Image (cartoon, rainbow, N blue to C red; front, side, top):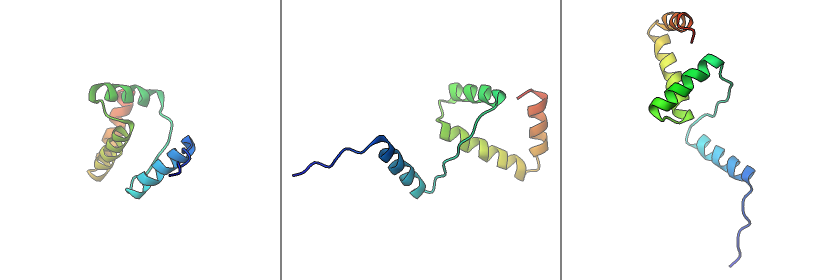
Length: 83
């Protein structure tokens, strides 16, 4: 019986990304503003959600505000509260 060579970290990461993509998930990347980073840390501490859950919920909530005609209200609230 021959041993398979160990996978490199890059190969493992590529395989993981491919499996996630096959599940229909989309990877997104970006940088948070200082205001958003404060909010992120508070959400993470209070909910123990992963990065993926926080991002997914943020997008879903923003979409809900948009669909219900509340996006301007949301943006104004964020500006008023320096967030």
